[in-house]
Image 1 (cartoon, helix red, strand yellow):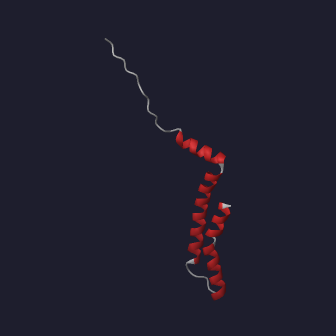
Image 2 (cartoon, rainbow, N blue to C red; image 1 turned 60 degrees about the vertical axis):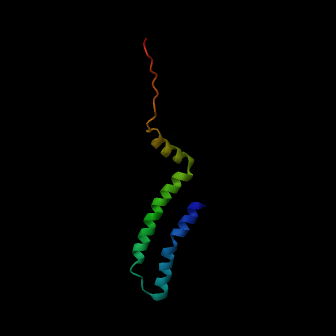
Length: 81
């Protein structure tokens, strides 16, 4: 549901440009830039959403980054008398 809501929300600038083009008969100069920008942003955010909401993919991604952490090693010292 969140993915669908995001896709609909990101499509609003394109819809507004389409309405402006139909009313005036001229495509605004900035409309192509806005369409490419929204497409690029939606692609990037959808990748992150898929990682967060798919348990298997989330597990693989987070395990890959968490196993490279440095852990403290406690050493035991003994004194010889």
